[in-house]
Image (tube, rainbow, N blue to C red):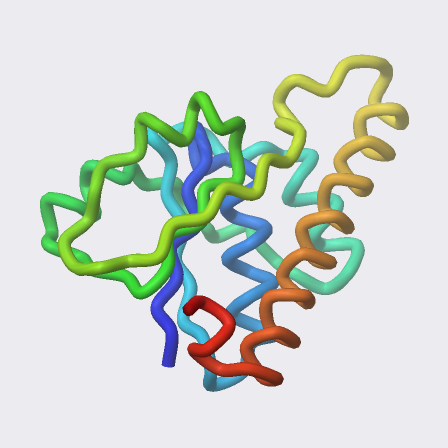
Length: 148
């Protein structure tokens, strides 16, 4: 089983969505967690668009990468889902984790009326789900060789 950590700036949207998708779609091959460079507040519009497709994030809380680091957590893979510049602030976890950056737009920076914001966040949600599905498919086809 691959232990995967998703990291974004505040653990309020992108990393939470990625964690939910990988834990459900990855079956017994993956165990995902998420955190932020700093703990934030879960974005209610993200909760809403995830609920639309059957993912209930209402009971989720946010956590910081530093908290997990201090707990001595280790991961096989760390995937930052924020900008490359922000991902540089992610602490180095013990072990030999593979590191990837999947830069998705930040739902907290979406502007417009409520419907425009929901539409934009749905697009981000769907992009994250697609990337998770690609990861799972590659892992099932190639196993750990996909990372060598």
